[in-house]
Amino acid sequence: VDAGAGAGEVAAPQRSDTIMVVRVDPVSGHVGLLSIPRDTRVAIPGRPHPEKIAHAHAYGQARGGPGAGARLVAETVEDFLGLPIDHFVEVDFDAFRAVVDAVGGVDICVEKPMRYTARSQNLEIRLEPGCQRLDGEKALQYVRYRQDGDIFRIERQQKFLRALAQQVLSLQSVLKLPQIAAAVGPKITTDLSHQRMLAFLTLLPKVRSQSITMGMLPGRPAYVDGVSYWLVDEEEARRIAL
Image (tube, rainbow, N blue to C red):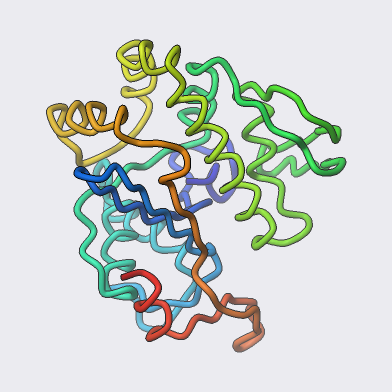
């Protein structure tokens, strides 16, 4: 989730900064990841007209209670893709930084200079091109940069997640998983029980980086009533999601 409208204000409504549907096969260890652009035009339960899917979290959050935003996002995705969403994990910027720092940083080749400042979002991005190890703060800058468009940002996010997965699945990180989980766990919001989370951790030795597949919901950018969206054919989206 993002920093919220009017970053720094108490209880500012937060939108989804990034949405991904992840499917895990506990037998084969295969992991499939589907990125949903935050501007995807969808019907949000309880709203009179289609809107950007990123707004669903803010509407759910307004209903109150931990996880209410993520639950409405999950419900929206279920309706849109025709997929049952068993669980959700909500990560804010602090949790993302904590994950990266807990594994000792992630090696990434930054493709180009990335510079951007938005004081309203408490955001300053200053990255130079070249292969380097990114700590939590620099990694957050890398995955948030979107001055070249959200689709390129999604490509970078997937590139980063693959590198993060390789880091987590390395022998050294696997041995440190209990400490990593203890550091990160209190910073995320999820409907997974403690026992269920431990069960997922036991699956990690089965997972290999080459068994992780990633894709993005296909569509096209367009304006509807003066608002920019990512327009998706629902039938094609459901076929890809399945």
